[in-house]
Length: 289
Image (cartoon, rainbow, N blue to C red; front, side, top):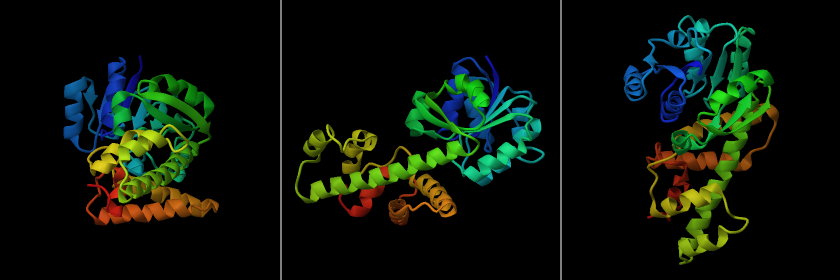
């Protein structure tokens, strides 16, 4: 068993760190709001640290899962950042969905003293709680192999994509694909309702064919019911799509559907749906109950 730290105990990080403790690893946690760290220790044991540096000191593996690029820099770089406390030969594994640019910055900032992996995840809160996340990883292949058994505490599908930043780029592909699928499902369900069809009967028929998707299997009922109080929030999806669109400008990739769906999510935010699940795209079509 390893000595590990986990920095960031939000809806994803809290259960992910919990799986590490359940597997027998010795876990130290840090959270910007100390009460969350105290609540985690009360449930899982382990230790809460006062700073990211304290949390990372002497650990074999240091994990992070925070909000965005600036949050990630805040917990890694600087006198109280995790990098200041990390031992030579340790591993830093970041599960934040962030830019490829910051992933490469952190890899360079390690100066070769320890390994750095960008390892964004897919599967949402439910996947984190069940320990069934998909993990896309950028960084050195030997660091990936060392980290894989520990990540396996909550990762069901763990893939090495390439060099530093490649994990974040793969997560961008994931979000681009999801955006189009959710919009298509929303339009399809709204069309079925407008035509007077029974959505259950329609989904029962088309879900056995080429239209099938995870979103269809897991979200059509709640979309029709107008229930959006779970899953991945619209605010976070807009953050992620913004990263995708910024990257596309740098590479010259064309993302017309992604840009359009991003604006549709802006409409949902204007409706008060900042914390609604991403399936709330149907609400702007006026067809959910």
